[in-house]
Image (tube, rainbow, N blue to C red; front, side):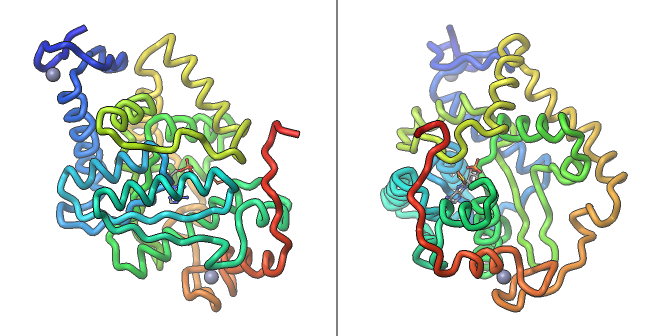
Length: 316
Ligand code: AMP
Ligand code: FES
Ligand code: ZN
Ligand code: ZN
């Protein structure tokens, strides 16, 4: 197995590109793919100030590393979700990563700052944990980016993530979600710009990137997500990809090139991301569709609730 670029021994094969790479040229490929996504989707300009949402997982640590390598001014933001040992470990990993490099990292702990955590919020709202978790993360990313004057919020969603979300949205023909599924969402009425620079790179490549760069990341996935639909879609797509390399990329980029605009054009105005009427939340001052925003409503609902011990699906 030889590197496609220099013919030296390769360390990784990428079947969808039908090519092998040595360490140096693989790392260059990753940076080039991120640079290309930034350019193709007009994510941000060279002087942009970026806020990278970092979870301690491979993708978000890698995207922060790549953006810094590419010369961007990128700071980190970590949210402590209070999901037992998983959150403790992810917090330690993220802090260590930032400290070793001397990169600015803002930390918001839900329990300390808002007196709730994800397992408690899930119990109080009687919804799946990912629902309160997603709402909290989105709100805190948005607020931190707007208050900090950042040009965009960066997340570590990769090609496998985006293809799995697209698969789920397509299986159920969730046309409102399809109308909004893009690797870049522009800023609008109180919300910051949001970008996903890893959409041209897959999960396996991000693992290899971290190993080759010596990035210590948390390998465990969130225990509350075990067995959810999203992971099932990923497995299904992996089975298809194994039979037919390049399917995931063709599925996702084919959607962006040839289908997404149709869903966006056909979406009723109420479903278009730029058309929702918003006011200001009377509690936090952020954008809201009602008197107080969904996040502040969650904070009120969870106030005083007895913290619950973590229950993991599948364990007894
Ligand atoms: P997930 O929703 O866990 O698949 O994560 C998607 C992206 O959201 C990650 O790549 C990160 O950019 C971001 N993210 C997830 N969890 C956190 C967290 N606890 N703190 C900050 N960012 C996070
Ligand atoms: Fe949000 Fe698991 S990361 S519930
Ligand atoms: Zn090479
Ligand atoms: Zn609010």
